[in-house]
Length: 418
Ligand SMILES: *[C@@H]1O[C@H](CO)[C@@H](O)[C@H](O)[C@H]1NC(C)=O
Ligand SMILES: *[C@@H]1O[C@H](CO)[C@@H](O)[C@H](O)[C@H]1NC(C)=O
Ligand SMILES: *[C@@H]1O[C@H](CO)[C@@H](O)[C@H](O)[C@H]1NC(C)=O
Image (tube, rainbow, N blue to C red; front, side, top):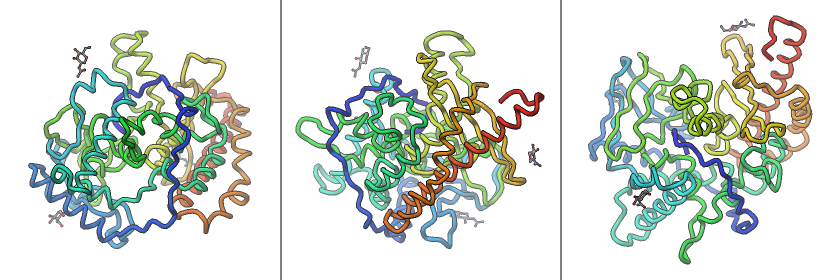
């Protein structure tokens, strides 16, 4: 779930009570790309009918118009000026929870209730119970998406392999992890087992997966949820006021040219933002809460929640067992200059993990492509294979770059920061 909502830091481990219901993904799902195109067209039309607006230079289309399998996003076919209104999302197309959830519910409650709400709408849409759903174009659009986009919905083979690649690194939030790395794919059972049944009715896990992946705090927001993620100075649009039930506008953050994509950061990377609570009231519980959630999302959590390996810069967080009170004590930021191919390594808040912590992780990853990943090339669903292979390559590369940087810093006193 993207946005600025602070996740609950208290992890309730109900996994032992509700371990059983795993939806095994089938490898045989077929995607109808023409229907996806049609669904997106309908979605745009519906948005306009409901009072929405698209700047004449904004196109909702596939990244590569000639490749029917490429991803959807919002692109410019002409220039726009800083602060120009690009898109208006009308309030009536959002599936949104009541304002009270803002003050009276935890993050997990919100995800759960929104998933049930989505399932109810979906039932209306499929079965026509109580008349059709008001959100038919959005539900039709969701229906055309792969059900296996995020690791929680992957095949058992894909999950096992991801677990192996992830290894023991980063067990934060899931201290009692039954298997190292499993929090990247088993979070539905581990964290939301309690949500899957209510008064004799069952919630399909897919709705939880959709809410986590596409939801924006208290709402599912059609069109807005098609805008893609990136961090840093490529961000091109402003973010909405999340609790507003009315329409909201998406504005250009800078002058932009034809061909650019409208992007924003799903997680406000920690080195891109500051906790206002800490600036105004340093040392308060609100400040501490904010600081601990600064590092809730990094490259691995993006994979968990959205199903892709984000572009550089990458961020990795490590639990330091010496300091049990601090959820996150150490983090690496790896940036790559795409032009000259060089890397810049920094540590989050100056707190670097040790060389000794990272070296075995890199060593463990080294032979894994040949020994574990490649042999499953023809067995795994293609998207899972592609994603795991890319994640493995990324982790190995970034950890190796980190080790190189530490060595170089040790040899050069002027670069003491690592
Ligand atoms: C840009 O895209 C929009 C939306 O598809 C379209 O209406 C408009 O004619 C396009 N403009 C140009 C210059 O191609
Ligand atoms: C939310 O909490 C406030 C304060 O405890 C209470 O007054 C209000 O009635 C609650 N709203 C709901 C819907 O439970
Ligand atoms: C690559 O470019 C970056 C940013 O311009 C610069 O800081 C860095 O020194 C360059 N590295 C090399 C090897 O040229």
